[in-house]
Amino acid sequence: MEASAEAGAAAAAAAARTLRWAGRAGHLAGVPRAAVFAAVGAFAKAYASMLNTTTVHNADALLQLVSSRPPGTPLLTVSNHMSTVDDPLMWGFKGFPTTDAKLGRWVLAAEDICFKNVVMSYMFRLGEPSYASLLSLLHPCIHCGPLILDRIFVSTGKCIPITRGAGIYQDYMNEALEVLSNGGWLHSFPEGKIAQDHQPIRRIKWGTASLIVRAPVTPIVLPIVHSGFDKVMPEKSFFGRRPPVPLCNKEIDIIVGEPIEFDLAGLKQEASLVPHDSSSERKGWPTVTPGGLDEAAQRWLYQKMSDKIQSVMESLRKTLLNLKQH
Image (cartoon, rainbow, N blue to C red; front, top):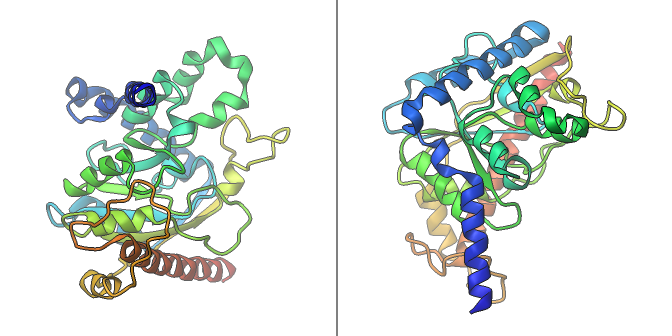
């Protein structure tokens, strides 16, 4: 009984801390979100288009899907993760509607980094104020320096918390699923962590595949690969830490791929033939999904789809390298 009560209290505390209500479009008639998206969008534009040099390949593929895809059709973009400023700066290139809160993406963000307290939760749910406003807000604890500031440049507004290690069927994933169910745009960093070593795309976490499968309308899955953000916000260049502000005069390269096609019906059929494995560890997985797949089948399906996403992203990474060399 005590354990149940403690679990309930922890869940209530998490709900209070992550402030889901602040992320709703109707919060204060949408005025705060629109204002901060305009501010953050201008900040992203300045850094991506003026203070640094950004080259985007196949930008029209992204622009068309963001602004004029069929009504009710969800968009799921996936990209590599090189720094804490990938988002929002990757959307700051010329011609992209960065300041439009209605067109802006939702993004999955680590709960332990972005939702540590009520103030940070409100900023990441709604949208971050300008950098100057943040300095003012954080003035009482400005002595913390980079320890605080490096947490600010993780993402900007319309963020959905994800508890790392809690599995792909955690409650927050249902919130992400709602975005797709409503025909929205969701962005994911499926590698699950920052990598600045310019190595091949790492193993893709299964959460992205699970969202594709579970969405009532299969989302358009658009891969994006970028480079250069590791120079804009290097992990260990400022006394062994990230610099307090993004750096300038760097070259950023972004390549947008073509939508990844999945034969979900065929994949589910193959998955249904996978032998049941009763020994696998269950982390809140449903015994059988609405599609009739048990846990072993789900694992096979999500791995197969994740492998394909990884392969496509790695191919894009190599293409981008070739483009930069010519």
